[in-house]
Image: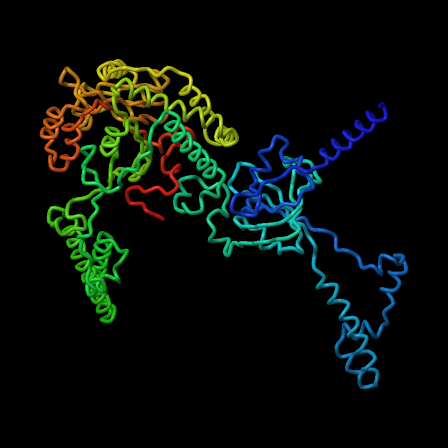
Length: 636
Protein backbone atom coordinates (compact mmCIF):
# COMPACT_ATOMS: atom_id res chain seq x y z
CA UNK A 1 0.00 0.00 0.00
CA UNK A 2 2.81 2.34 0.89
CA UNK A 3 4.51 1.48 -2.39
CA UNK A 4 1.35 2.40 -4.32
CA UNK A 5 1.12 5.72 -2.51
CA UNK A 6 4.77 6.46 -3.29
CA UNK A 7 4.21 5.54 -6.94
CA UNK A 8 1.10 7.72 -7.12
CA UNK A 9 2.99 10.60 -5.53
CA UNK A 10 5.85 10.15 -7.99
CA UNK A 11 3.42 10.12 -10.94
CA UNK A 12 1.76 13.27 -9.67
CA UNK A 13 5.14 14.97 -9.34
CA UNK A 14 6.09 13.95 -12.86
CA UNK A 15 2.74 15.23 -14.18
CA UNK A 16 3.24 18.57 -12.42
CA UNK A 17 6.71 18.89 -13.89
CA UNK A 18 5.36 18.16 -17.36
CA UNK A 19 2.66 20.76 -16.86
CA UNK A 20 5.23 23.31 -15.73
CA UNK A 21 7.29 22.71 -18.86
CA UNK A 22 4.30 23.22 -21.18
CA UNK A 23 4.75 26.58 -22.87
CA UNK A 24 1.83 29.00 -22.73
CA UNK A 25 -0.11 29.44 -25.97
CA UNK A 26 0.38 32.76 -27.78
CA UNK A 27 -2.71 33.57 -29.88
CA UNK A 28 -2.25 35.05 -33.33
CA UNK A 29 -4.12 38.11 -34.49
CA UNK A 30 -7.45 37.28 -36.08
CA UNK A 31 -7.19 37.01 -39.85
CA UNK A 32 -3.39 37.21 -39.93
CA UNK A 33 -0.51 34.96 -38.93
CA UNK A 34 1.21 37.46 -36.68
CA UNK A 35 1.06 38.15 -32.95
CA UNK A 36 0.01 41.69 -32.01
CA UNK A 37 2.41 43.41 -29.63
CA UNK A 38 -0.31 44.04 -27.05
CA UNK A 39 -0.59 40.27 -26.55
CA UNK A 40 3.05 40.17 -25.47
CA UNK A 41 3.63 43.49 -23.75
CA UNK A 42 0.36 43.86 -21.80
CA UNK A 43 0.93 40.64 -19.86
CA UNK A 44 1.56 41.00 -16.13
CA UNK A 45 5.09 39.65 -16.57
CA UNK A 46 5.72 41.81 -19.63
CA UNK A 47 6.10 38.68 -21.78
CA UNK A 48 8.86 37.11 -19.67
CA UNK A 49 6.96 33.84 -19.39
CA UNK A 50 7.04 33.48 -23.18
CA UNK A 51 10.84 33.41 -23.53
CA UNK A 52 12.03 30.74 -25.95
CA UNK A 53 8.90 30.66 -28.12
CA UNK A 54 9.05 31.33 -31.85
CA UNK A 55 6.52 33.84 -33.19
CA UNK A 56 5.81 36.17 -36.13
CA UNK A 57 5.49 39.89 -35.35
CA UNK A 58 5.14 42.95 -37.54
CA UNK A 59 5.11 46.72 -37.19
CA UNK A 60 6.64 50.02 -38.17
CA UNK A 61 10.09 51.20 -37.15
CA UNK A 62 10.13 54.05 -34.64
CA UNK A 63 13.85 54.20 -33.93
CA UNK A 64 16.86 52.08 -34.85
CA UNK A 65 20.58 51.73 -34.22
CA UNK A 66 23.30 49.56 -35.74
CA UNK A 67 25.80 47.63 -33.62
CA UNK A 68 28.83 46.60 -35.68
CA UNK A 69 30.67 43.38 -35.00
CA UNK A 70 34.42 42.69 -35.24
CA UNK A 71 35.20 41.02 -38.60
CA UNK A 72 35.66 37.27 -38.06
CA UNK A 73 39.18 35.91 -38.55
CA UNK A 74 39.80 33.12 -41.06
CA UNK A 75 40.15 29.51 -39.76
CA UNK A 76 43.76 29.37 -41.00
CA UNK A 77 44.86 32.41 -39.01
CA UNK A 78 43.02 31.05 -35.95
CA UNK A 79 45.03 27.81 -36.04
CA UNK A 80 48.44 29.40 -36.59
CA UNK A 81 50.45 31.27 -33.98
CA UNK A 82 50.39 35.04 -34.41
CA UNK A 83 54.22 35.48 -34.70
CA UNK A 84 54.39 33.00 -37.56
CA UNK A 85 51.45 34.61 -39.25
CA UNK A 86 53.15 37.96 -39.05
CA UNK A 87 56.34 36.44 -40.55
CA UNK A 88 54.36 35.05 -43.46
CA UNK A 89 52.71 38.41 -44.10
CA UNK A 90 56.17 40.07 -44.24
CA UNK A 91 57.61 37.44 -46.59
CA UNK A 92 57.37 39.64 -49.69
CA UNK A 93 60.29 40.24 -52.07
CA UNK A 94 61.60 43.66 -53.01
CA UNK A 95 60.69 43.08 -56.64
CA UNK A 96 57.06 42.39 -55.66
CA UNK A 97 56.91 45.62 -53.75
CA UNK A 98 58.51 47.58 -56.59
CA UNK A 99 56.24 46.19 -59.27
CA UNK A 100 53.23 46.80 -57.14
CA UNK A 101 54.20 50.42 -56.41
CA UNK A 102 55.99 51.29 -59.70
CA UNK A 103 54.23 50.22 -62.92
CA UNK A 104 57.37 51.09 -64.99
CA UNK A 105 59.37 48.47 -63.10
CA UNK A 106 56.92 45.78 -64.26
CA UNK A 107 57.71 46.72 -67.83
CA UNK A 108 61.47 46.08 -67.31
CA UNK A 109 60.76 42.70 -65.70
CA UNK A 110 58.70 41.62 -68.67
CA UNK A 111 61.55 42.61 -71.07
CA UNK A 112 63.95 40.35 -69.16
CA UNK A 113 61.59 37.35 -69.27
CA UNK A 114 60.37 37.33 -65.71
CA UNK A 115 57.02 38.89 -66.43
CA UNK A 116 55.03 35.66 -66.36
CA UNK A 117 56.24 34.70 -62.90
CA UNK A 118 55.89 38.15 -61.50
CA UNK A 119 52.46 38.60 -63.17
CA UNK A 120 51.25 35.49 -61.46
CA UNK A 121 52.50 36.83 -58.10
CA UNK A 122 50.74 40.11 -58.83
CA UNK A 123 47.41 38.36 -59.45
CA UNK A 124 47.70 36.41 -56.22
CA UNK A 125 48.56 39.55 -54.26
CA UNK A 126 45.71 41.55 -55.84
CA UNK A 127 43.21 38.74 -55.20
CA UNK A 128 44.13 38.76 -51.53
CA UNK A 129 43.63 42.50 -51.29
CA UNK A 130 40.22 42.38 -53.05
CA UNK A 131 39.10 39.53 -50.84
CA UNK A 132 39.95 41.52 -47.72
CA UNK A 133 38.21 44.68 -49.05
CA UNK A 134 35.02 42.96 -50.22
CA UNK A 135 34.51 41.03 -47.01
CA UNK A 136 31.19 42.43 -45.61
CA UNK A 137 31.14 44.15 -42.25
CA UNK A 138 28.70 42.21 -40.07
CA UNK A 139 26.35 44.09 -37.75
CA UNK A 140 23.16 43.78 -35.74
CA UNK A 141 20.35 46.30 -36.20
CA UNK A 142 18.36 47.02 -33.04
CA UNK A 143 14.83 48.16 -33.96
CA UNK A 144 12.10 49.64 -31.81
CA UNK A 145 8.85 48.81 -33.58
CA UNK A 146 5.17 49.41 -32.88
CA UNK A 147 2.04 48.02 -34.50
CA UNK A 148 -0.48 50.45 -32.98
CA UNK A 149 -2.03 47.93 -30.58
CA UNK A 150 -0.50 49.54 -27.48
CA UNK A 151 1.75 52.36 -26.28
CA UNK A 152 4.83 50.20 -25.70
CA UNK A 153 7.28 49.31 -28.46
CA UNK A 154 9.07 45.98 -28.95
CA UNK A 155 12.81 45.58 -29.45
CA UNK A 156 13.77 43.44 -32.45
CA UNK A 157 17.30 42.34 -33.37
CA UNK A 158 17.96 41.80 -37.09
CA UNK A 159 21.34 40.59 -38.37
CA UNK A 160 22.75 42.37 -41.39
CA UNK A 161 22.85 39.01 -43.18
CA UNK A 162 19.02 38.94 -43.10
CA UNK A 163 18.34 42.46 -44.42
CA UNK A 164 20.45 45.47 -45.43
CA UNK A 165 20.73 47.85 -42.45
CA UNK A 166 20.31 50.87 -44.73
CA UNK A 167 16.79 49.72 -45.63
CA UNK A 168 15.39 48.67 -42.27
CA UNK A 169 16.77 51.47 -40.12
CA UNK A 170 14.74 54.30 -41.63
CA UNK A 171 11.82 55.49 -39.49
CA UNK A 172 8.46 54.37 -40.87
CA UNK A 173 9.79 51.16 -42.47
CA UNK A 174 7.32 48.28 -42.19
CA UNK A 175 8.84 44.94 -41.21
CA UNK A 176 7.45 41.47 -40.60
CA UNK A 177 9.82 38.97 -39.00
CA UNK A 178 9.83 35.47 -37.59
CA UNK A 179 11.96 35.10 -34.52
CA UNK A 180 12.44 33.84 -30.98
CA UNK A 181 11.49 35.66 -27.80
CA UNK A 182 14.48 36.16 -25.53
CA UNK A 183 15.70 38.24 -22.62
CA UNK A 184 17.77 41.29 -23.61
CA UNK A 185 21.51 40.83 -23.09
CA UNK A 186 21.77 44.27 -21.49
CA UNK A 187 19.46 45.69 -18.84
CA UNK A 188 17.06 48.44 -19.89
CA UNK A 189 13.40 49.32 -20.22
CA UNK A 190 12.64 46.23 -22.34
CA UNK A 191 11.77 42.99 -20.55
CA UNK A 192 11.85 40.91 -23.72
CA UNK A 193 13.09 41.23 -27.28
CA UNK A 194 12.80 39.30 -30.53
CA UNK A 195 15.83 37.72 -32.19
CA UNK A 196 14.85 37.65 -35.88
CA UNK A 197 15.51 34.47 -37.83
CA UNK A 198 13.65 35.41 -41.01
CA UNK A 199 12.50 38.66 -42.57
CA UNK A 200 9.14 37.87 -44.17
CA UNK A 201 8.23 41.33 -45.45
CA UNK A 202 9.96 44.68 -45.79
CA UNK A 203 8.13 47.88 -46.74
CA UNK A 204 10.94 50.38 -47.20
CA UNK A 205 10.65 54.17 -47.07
CA UNK A 206 11.48 55.20 -50.62
CA UNK A 207 12.56 58.76 -49.91
CA UNK A 208 13.34 59.75 -46.33
CA UNK A 209 13.34 63.45 -47.25
CA UNK A 210 9.72 63.28 -48.40
CA UNK A 211 8.52 61.18 -45.46
CA UNK A 212 7.02 63.75 -43.05
CA UNK A 213 7.58 61.74 -39.87
CA UNK A 214 11.33 61.60 -40.40
CA UNK A 215 11.42 64.77 -38.29
CA UNK A 216 10.97 64.02 -34.60
CA UNK A 217 8.28 65.59 -32.41
CA UNK A 218 6.22 67.40 -35.04
CA UNK A 219 3.51 69.54 -33.39
CA UNK A 220 -0.07 68.37 -33.81
CA UNK A 221 -1.08 71.32 -35.99
CA UNK A 222 1.70 70.46 -38.46
CA UNK A 223 0.54 66.84 -38.64
CA UNK A 224 -2.87 67.93 -39.97
CA UNK A 225 -1.31 68.30 -43.42
CA UNK A 226 -0.50 64.56 -43.38
CA UNK A 227 -3.63 63.07 -41.87
CA UNK A 228 -2.84 59.74 -43.57
CA UNK A 229 0.50 59.43 -41.72
CA UNK A 230 -0.23 60.98 -38.33
CA UNK A 231 -1.74 57.82 -36.72
CA UNK A 232 1.82 56.43 -36.79
CA UNK A 233 2.78 58.99 -34.13
CA UNK A 234 2.49 57.92 -30.50
CA UNK A 235 0.16 60.77 -29.53
CA UNK A 236 -2.36 60.36 -32.34
CA UNK A 237 -2.29 56.56 -31.98
CA UNK A 238 -3.10 56.96 -28.29
CA UNK A 239 -5.92 59.42 -29.07
CA UNK A 240 -7.34 56.94 -31.59
CA UNK A 241 -7.36 54.08 -29.09
CA UNK A 242 -9.09 56.31 -26.53
CA UNK A 243 -11.61 57.36 -29.19
CA UNK A 244 -12.28 53.70 -29.92
CA UNK A 245 -12.83 52.99 -26.20
CA UNK A 246 -15.27 55.91 -25.95
CA UNK A 247 -17.19 54.59 -28.96
CA UNK A 248 -17.40 51.14 -27.39
CA UNK A 249 -18.52 52.66 -24.06
CA UNK A 250 -21.27 54.64 -25.81
CA UNK A 251 -22.77 51.60 -27.50
CA UNK A 252 -22.31 49.59 -24.28
CA UNK A 253 -24.34 52.13 -22.27
CA UNK A 254 -27.30 52.14 -24.63
CA UNK A 255 -27.28 48.38 -25.10
CA UNK A 256 -27.28 47.84 -21.33
CA UNK A 257 -30.22 50.22 -20.93
CA UNK A 258 -32.50 48.71 -23.58
CA UNK A 259 -32.05 51.22 -26.41
CA UNK A 260 -32.29 50.16 -30.06
CA UNK A 261 -29.65 51.39 -32.52
CA UNK A 262 -31.19 53.20 -35.51
CA UNK A 263 -29.35 54.66 -38.52
CA UNK A 264 -30.74 58.03 -39.56
CA UNK A 265 -30.29 59.53 -43.06
CA UNK A 266 -27.32 61.70 -43.99
CA UNK A 267 -29.33 63.46 -46.74
CA UNK A 268 -32.57 65.13 -45.67
CA UNK A 269 -35.06 67.86 -46.60
CA UNK A 270 -35.71 68.97 -43.02
CA UNK A 271 -33.85 71.80 -41.32
CA UNK A 272 -33.95 70.24 -37.86
CA UNK A 273 -32.11 73.02 -36.04
CA UNK A 274 -33.53 76.01 -37.95
CA UNK A 275 -29.94 76.55 -39.05
CA UNK A 276 -29.06 78.42 -42.22
CA UNK A 277 -25.50 77.02 -42.39
CA UNK A 278 -26.36 73.86 -44.30
CA UNK A 279 -24.65 71.98 -47.10
CA UNK A 280 -26.82 71.74 -50.23
CA UNK A 281 -26.88 68.43 -52.05
CA UNK A 282 -27.51 69.04 -55.75
CA UNK A 283 -26.51 67.95 -59.23
CA UNK A 284 -27.71 71.18 -60.88
CA UNK A 285 -24.54 73.23 -60.55
CA UNK A 286 -23.39 73.60 -64.16
CA UNK A 287 -20.01 72.24 -65.12
CA UNK A 288 -17.70 74.25 -67.43
CA UNK A 289 -17.80 73.32 -71.10
CA UNK A 290 -14.77 71.86 -72.82
CA UNK A 291 -13.97 75.21 -74.39
CA UNK A 292 -14.26 77.18 -71.19
CA UNK A 293 -12.26 74.64 -69.21
CA UNK A 294 -9.42 74.93 -71.73
CA UNK A 295 -9.56 78.69 -71.38
CA UNK A 296 -8.99 78.46 -67.66
CA UNK A 297 -6.51 75.56 -67.54
CA UNK A 298 -3.64 78.01 -67.55
CA UNK A 299 -5.07 80.08 -64.70
CA UNK A 300 -6.03 77.28 -62.32
CA UNK A 301 -4.65 77.93 -58.87
CA UNK A 302 -4.18 81.70 -59.53
CA UNK A 303 -6.26 84.15 -57.51
CA UNK A 304 -7.80 87.27 -59.04
CA UNK A 305 -6.33 89.43 -56.26
CA UNK A 306 -2.76 88.30 -57.02
CA UNK A 307 -3.23 88.97 -60.74
CA UNK A 308 -4.55 92.47 -60.03
CA UNK A 309 -1.53 93.18 -57.83
CA UNK A 310 0.75 91.96 -60.61
CA UNK A 311 -1.14 94.14 -63.09
CA UNK A 312 -0.51 97.19 -60.94
CA UNK A 313 3.21 96.43 -60.67
CA UNK A 314 3.58 95.86 -64.42
CA UNK A 315 1.76 99.16 -65.16
CA UNK A 316 4.13 101.06 -62.86
CA UNK A 317 7.10 99.34 -64.50
CA UNK A 318 5.87 100.32 -67.97
CA UNK A 319 5.43 103.95 -66.88
CA UNK A 320 8.97 103.93 -65.51
CA UNK A 321 10.37 102.57 -68.79
CA UNK A 322 8.60 105.30 -70.73
CA UNK A 323 9.96 107.99 -68.42
CA UNK A 324 13.57 106.78 -68.64
CA UNK A 325 13.63 106.54 -72.47
CA UNK A 326 14.52 102.84 -72.35
CA UNK A 327 15.32 100.94 -75.51
CA UNK A 328 12.45 100.08 -77.79
CA UNK A 329 12.76 96.29 -77.33
CA UNK A 330 12.40 96.47 -73.52
CA UNK A 331 9.40 98.78 -73.90
CA UNK A 332 7.64 96.49 -76.38
CA UNK A 333 8.28 93.47 -74.14
CA UNK A 334 6.75 95.28 -71.14
CA UNK A 335 3.69 96.30 -73.21
CA UNK A 336 3.20 92.68 -74.36
CA UNK A 337 3.56 91.40 -70.78
CA UNK A 338 0.99 93.91 -69.54
CA UNK A 339 -1.43 92.88 -72.29
CA UNK A 340 -1.22 89.19 -71.30
CA UNK A 341 -1.78 90.06 -67.65
CA UNK A 342 -4.86 92.11 -68.58
CA UNK A 343 -6.25 89.12 -70.52
CA UNK A 344 -5.62 86.85 -67.56
CA UNK A 345 -7.42 89.24 -65.20
CA UNK A 346 -10.42 89.41 -67.57
CA UNK A 347 -10.63 85.61 -67.71
CA UNK A 348 -10.53 85.33 -63.93
CA UNK A 349 -13.21 88.00 -63.49
CA UNK A 350 -15.48 86.18 -65.92
CA UNK A 351 -14.87 82.89 -64.14
CA UNK A 352 -15.62 84.45 -60.75
CA UNK A 353 -18.89 85.96 -61.99
CA UNK A 354 -19.94 82.60 -63.42
CA UNK A 355 -19.21 80.80 -60.17
CA UNK A 356 -21.22 83.35 -58.20
CA UNK A 357 -24.15 82.92 -60.55
CA UNK A 358 -24.02 79.14 -60.20
CA UNK A 359 -23.88 79.41 -56.41
CA UNK A 360 -27.27 81.14 -56.18
CA UNK A 361 -29.63 78.32 -55.29
CA UNK A 362 -32.71 80.48 -55.81
CA UNK A 363 -31.96 80.46 -59.53
CA UNK A 364 -32.00 76.67 -59.65
CA UNK A 365 -35.07 74.66 -60.57
CA UNK A 366 -35.00 71.89 -57.98
CA UNK A 367 -37.80 70.00 -59.74
CA UNK A 368 -35.10 68.97 -62.22
CA UNK A 369 -32.64 68.05 -59.48
CA UNK A 370 -31.69 64.50 -58.48
CA UNK A 371 -34.28 64.34 -55.65
CA UNK A 372 -36.78 66.75 -57.32
CA UNK A 373 -36.51 69.05 -54.28
CA UNK A 374 -33.97 70.86 -52.12
CA UNK A 375 -31.81 68.46 -50.11
CA UNK A 376 -29.18 69.03 -47.44
CA UNK A 377 -26.61 67.15 -45.42
CA UNK A 378 -28.24 66.55 -42.06
CA UNK A 379 -27.48 68.86 -39.15
CA UNK A 380 -29.23 66.62 -36.62
CA UNK A 381 -30.94 63.23 -36.67
CA UNK A 382 -33.24 63.80 -33.71
CA UNK A 383 -36.38 64.46 -35.80
CA UNK A 384 -36.00 61.18 -37.63
CA UNK A 385 -35.26 59.35 -34.38
CA UNK A 386 -38.58 60.58 -32.98
CA UNK A 387 -40.52 58.53 -35.52
CA UNK A 388 -38.82 55.36 -34.27
CA UNK A 389 -39.10 56.35 -30.61
CA UNK A 390 -42.86 56.76 -31.13
CA UNK A 391 -43.02 53.11 -32.23
CA UNK A 392 -40.16 51.28 -30.48
CA UNK A 393 -39.60 53.19 -27.24
CA UNK A 394 -35.98 54.16 -26.58
CA UNK A 395 -33.68 54.53 -29.59
CA UNK A 396 -30.31 56.07 -30.35
CA UNK A 397 -28.09 56.89 -33.31
CA UNK A 398 -24.37 57.52 -33.80
CA UNK A 399 -23.08 59.21 -36.93
CA UNK A 400 -21.73 62.30 -38.71
CA UNK A 401 -23.59 65.62 -38.78
CA UNK A 402 -22.76 68.63 -40.95
CA UNK A 403 -22.77 72.42 -40.59
CA UNK A 404 -21.40 74.77 -43.24
CA UNK A 405 -19.76 77.11 -40.76
CA UNK A 406 -17.25 79.59 -42.15
CA UNK A 407 -15.66 80.47 -38.82
CA UNK A 408 -12.45 78.93 -37.54
CA UNK A 409 -13.00 77.32 -34.15
CA UNK A 410 -11.09 74.93 -31.91
CA UNK A 411 -14.40 73.33 -30.85
CA UNK A 412 -16.27 72.84 -34.12
CA UNK A 413 -15.56 71.71 -37.67
CA UNK A 414 -17.81 71.10 -40.67
CA UNK A 415 -18.26 67.37 -40.03
CA UNK A 416 -18.67 66.16 -36.46
CA UNK A 417 -19.90 62.88 -35.00
CA UNK A 418 -22.95 63.01 -32.78
CA UNK A 419 -24.61 60.56 -30.39
CA UNK A 420 -28.36 61.19 -30.35
CA UNK A 421 -31.07 59.54 -28.26
CA UNK A 422 -34.85 59.78 -28.11
CA UNK A 423 -37.04 58.24 -25.40
CA UNK A 424 -40.79 57.74 -25.56
CA UNK A 425 -42.85 58.62 -22.44
CA UNK A 426 -39.88 60.69 -21.22
CA UNK A 427 -39.90 64.25 -19.92
CA UNK A 428 -37.16 66.80 -19.22
CA UNK A 429 -35.93 65.28 -15.94
CA UNK A 430 -35.61 61.80 -17.44
CA UNK A 431 -33.73 63.14 -20.46
CA UNK A 432 -31.30 65.01 -18.19
CA UNK A 433 -30.84 61.90 -16.06
CA UNK A 434 -30.05 59.71 -19.07
CA UNK A 435 -27.58 62.23 -20.50
CA UNK A 436 -25.82 62.54 -17.12
CA UNK A 437 -25.56 58.77 -16.71
CA UNK A 438 -24.15 58.38 -20.24
CA UNK A 439 -21.47 61.01 -19.63
CA UNK A 440 -20.43 59.43 -16.33
CA UNK A 441 -20.39 55.95 -17.87
CA UNK A 442 -18.07 56.76 -20.76
CA UNK A 443 -15.66 58.75 -18.56
CA UNK A 444 -15.47 55.87 -16.09
CA UNK A 445 -15.01 53.40 -18.94
CA UNK A 446 -11.98 55.17 -20.42
CA UNK A 447 -10.33 55.45 -16.99
CA UNK A 448 -10.76 51.73 -16.36
CA UNK A 449 -10.02 50.37 -19.82
CA UNK A 450 -7.26 52.65 -21.14
CA UNK A 451 -4.74 52.82 -18.26
CA UNK A 452 -1.58 52.89 -20.38
CA UNK A 453 -2.91 55.45 -22.84
CA UNK A 454 -4.16 57.62 -19.99
CA UNK A 455 -0.71 57.45 -18.35
CA UNK A 456 0.82 58.67 -21.61
CA UNK A 457 -1.73 61.50 -21.94
CA UNK A 458 -1.14 62.43 -18.29
CA UNK A 459 2.60 62.64 -18.88
CA UNK A 460 2.76 64.23 -22.33
CA UNK A 461 -0.45 66.24 -22.80
CA UNK A 462 -2.39 67.24 -19.68
CA UNK A 463 -1.42 66.49 -16.08
CA UNK A 464 -4.92 67.31 -14.82
CA UNK A 465 -6.82 65.02 -17.18
CA UNK A 466 -7.35 62.08 -14.81
CA UNK A 467 -8.60 64.19 -11.86
CA UNK A 468 -10.94 66.03 -14.25
CA UNK A 469 -12.46 62.77 -15.52
CA UNK A 470 -12.76 61.48 -11.97
CA UNK A 471 -14.65 64.67 -11.07
CA UNK A 472 -17.13 64.02 -13.87
CA UNK A 473 -17.62 60.43 -12.68
CA UNK A 474 -18.00 61.12 -8.97
CA UNK A 475 -19.44 64.62 -8.60
CA UNK A 476 -23.03 65.79 -8.47
CA UNK A 477 -23.78 67.97 -11.51
CA UNK A 478 -24.87 71.48 -10.55
CA UNK A 479 -28.36 72.14 -11.98
CA UNK A 480 -29.48 75.72 -12.48
CA UNK A 481 -32.14 77.38 -14.66
CA UNK A 482 -31.09 79.80 -17.37
CA UNK A 483 -32.34 82.82 -15.41
CA UNK A 484 -30.08 81.93 -12.47
CA UNK A 485 -27.13 81.39 -14.81
CA UNK A 486 -27.61 84.94 -16.09
CA UNK A 487 -27.62 86.31 -12.54
CA UNK A 488 -24.45 84.35 -11.69
CA UNK A 489 -22.67 85.70 -14.77
CA UNK A 490 -23.77 89.26 -13.98
CA UNK A 491 -22.30 88.96 -10.50
CA UNK A 492 -19.03 87.85 -12.09
CA UNK A 493 -18.79 91.05 -14.17
CA UNK A 494 -16.43 92.65 -11.67
CA UNK A 495 -13.93 89.83 -12.12
CA UNK A 496 -14.63 89.19 -15.79
CA UNK A 497 -15.56 92.47 -17.47
CA UNK A 498 -16.18 90.89 -20.89
CA UNK A 499 -18.98 88.64 -19.64
CA UNK A 500 -21.69 91.28 -20.11
CA UNK A 501 -24.94 89.45 -20.74
CA UNK A 502 -28.70 90.02 -20.51
CA UNK A 503 -31.69 87.67 -20.26
CA UNK A 504 -32.83 86.34 -23.63
CA UNK A 505 -29.46 86.08 -25.38
CA UNK A 506 -27.73 82.74 -26.02
CA UNK A 507 -24.82 81.78 -23.81
CA UNK A 508 -21.50 81.84 -25.62
CA UNK A 509 -18.73 79.25 -25.28
CA UNK A 510 -16.89 81.69 -23.04
CA UNK A 511 -19.92 82.04 -20.74
CA UNK A 512 -20.40 78.29 -20.46
CA UNK A 513 -16.79 77.45 -19.79
CA UNK A 514 -16.43 80.26 -17.26
CA UNK A 515 -19.26 78.82 -15.22
CA UNK A 516 -17.84 75.29 -15.25
CA UNK A 517 -14.17 76.25 -14.86
CA UNK A 518 -14.25 79.25 -12.54
CA UNK A 519 -17.54 79.37 -10.68
CA UNK A 520 -18.65 75.78 -9.99
CA UNK A 521 -15.44 73.92 -10.93
CA UNK A 522 -17.46 70.85 -11.98
CA UNK A 523 -20.07 69.89 -14.61
CA UNK A 524 -23.09 72.20 -14.79
CA UNK A 525 -26.58 71.60 -16.21
CA UNK A 526 -28.41 74.71 -17.41
CA UNK A 527 -32.11 74.28 -18.29
CA UNK A 528 -35.29 76.23 -19.16
CA UNK A 529 -33.82 78.43 -21.89
CA UNK A 530 -35.71 81.25 -23.68
CA UNK A 531 -37.58 79.79 -26.62
CA UNK A 532 -35.81 82.18 -29.02
CA UNK A 533 -32.43 80.48 -28.54
CA UNK A 534 -33.56 76.85 -28.98
CA UNK A 535 -34.93 74.84 -31.94
CA UNK A 536 -38.61 75.01 -32.91
CA UNK A 537 -39.46 71.49 -31.72
CA UNK A 538 -38.61 72.04 -28.03
CA UNK A 539 -41.62 71.94 -25.68
CA UNK A 540 -42.79 75.32 -24.39
CA UNK A 541 -43.11 75.77 -20.63
CA UNK A 542 -46.22 77.13 -18.98
CA UNK A 543 -44.73 80.63 -18.65
CA UNK A 544 -44.82 81.03 -22.44
CA UNK A 545 -41.27 82.40 -22.45
CA UNK A 546 -39.02 79.44 -21.81
CA UNK A 547 -38.73 75.94 -23.21
CA UNK A 548 -37.80 72.58 -21.68
CA UNK A 549 -34.25 72.46 -23.00
CA UNK A 550 -30.96 71.76 -21.22
CA UNK A 551 -27.20 71.86 -21.79
CA UNK A 552 -24.51 69.92 -19.90
CA UNK A 553 -21.26 71.87 -19.59
CA UNK A 554 -17.97 70.34 -18.42
CA UNK A 555 -14.75 72.10 -17.37
CA UNK A 556 -12.12 72.92 -20.04
CA UNK A 557 -14.39 71.84 -22.91
CA UNK A 558 -17.78 73.55 -22.58
CA UNK A 559 -21.18 72.24 -23.63
CA UNK A 560 -20.91 68.60 -24.68
CA UNK A 561 -24.61 67.61 -24.50
CA UNK A 562 -27.67 69.59 -25.59
CA UNK A 563 -31.11 68.10 -25.07
CA UNK A 564 -34.79 68.78 -24.53
CA UNK A 565 -38.28 67.50 -24.00
CA UNK A 566 -39.91 67.79 -27.40
CA UNK A 567 -43.25 69.40 -28.18
CA UNK A 568 -45.97 66.75 -28.46
CA UNK A 569 -48.90 69.23 -28.83
CA UNK A 570 -49.84 69.64 -32.49
CA UNK A 571 -51.22 73.18 -32.22
CA UNK A 572 -48.21 74.48 -30.28
CA UNK A 573 -45.77 72.95 -32.73
CA UNK A 574 -47.64 74.23 -35.81
CA UNK A 575 -47.73 77.74 -34.32
CA UNK A 576 -44.02 77.65 -33.61
CA UNK A 577 -43.21 76.58 -37.19
CA UNK A 578 -45.26 79.50 -38.51
CA UNK A 579 -43.64 81.98 -36.11
CA UNK A 580 -40.19 81.07 -37.40
CA UNK A 581 -41.27 81.20 -41.05
CA UNK A 582 -40.35 77.60 -41.71
CA UNK A 583 -41.83 75.62 -44.59
CA UNK A 584 -44.76 73.66 -43.15
CA UNK A 585 -44.61 71.34 -46.17
CA UNK A 586 -41.17 70.08 -45.10
CA UNK A 587 -42.50 69.13 -41.66
CA UNK A 588 -45.80 67.50 -42.56
CA UNK A 589 -44.40 64.06 -41.79
CA UNK A 590 -43.15 65.38 -38.44
CA UNK A 591 -46.56 66.86 -37.60
CA UNK A 592 -48.15 63.51 -38.46
CA UNK A 593 -46.47 62.04 -35.37
CA UNK A 594 -48.60 64.47 -33.31
CA UNK A 595 -51.78 63.78 -35.27
CA UNK A 596 -51.69 60.03 -34.88
CA UNK A 597 -50.87 58.54 -31.50
CA UNK A 598 -48.75 61.30 -29.98
CA UNK A 599 -46.66 60.72 -26.86
CA UNK A 600 -44.50 62.79 -24.54
CA UNK A 601 -40.87 62.24 -25.38
CA UNK A 602 -37.43 63.72 -24.90
CA UNK A 603 -33.84 63.25 -25.95
CA UNK A 604 -30.44 64.81 -26.44
CA UNK A 605 -27.42 65.14 -28.70
CA UNK A 606 -23.90 64.43 -27.42
CA UNK A 607 -21.04 65.92 -29.47
CA UNK A 608 -18.76 62.90 -29.53
CA UNK A 609 -15.64 64.70 -30.77
CA UNK A 610 -15.82 67.07 -27.78
CA UNK A 611 -15.96 64.05 -25.47
CA UNK A 612 -12.66 62.92 -27.01
CA UNK A 613 -11.27 66.38 -26.17
CA UNK A 614 -12.48 65.91 -22.61
CA UNK A 615 -10.83 62.49 -22.33
CA UNK A 616 -7.48 63.47 -23.87
CA UNK A 617 -6.88 67.07 -22.84
CA UNK A 618 -6.16 68.06 -26.45
CA UNK A 619 -7.03 71.71 -27.13
CA UNK A 620 -8.20 71.57 -30.77
CA UNK A 621 -10.93 69.26 -32.06
CA UNK A 622 -9.14 68.90 -35.41
CA UNK A 623 -6.43 66.90 -33.66
CA UNK A 624 -8.80 64.21 -32.33
CA UNK A 625 -10.77 63.62 -35.55
CA UNK A 626 -9.17 61.08 -37.93
CA UNK A 627 -9.82 63.18 -41.06
CA UNK A 628 -11.03 66.66 -40.06
CA UNK A 629 -13.09 68.73 -42.50
CA UNK A 630 -13.06 72.44 -41.75
CA UNK A 631 -13.65 75.69 -43.61
CA UNK A 632 -11.09 76.02 -46.41
CA UNK A 633 -9.38 72.72 -45.55
CA UNK A 634 -10.02 69.31 -47.09
CA UNK A 635 -6.64 67.59 -47.37
CA UNK A 636 -7.64 63.93 -47.84
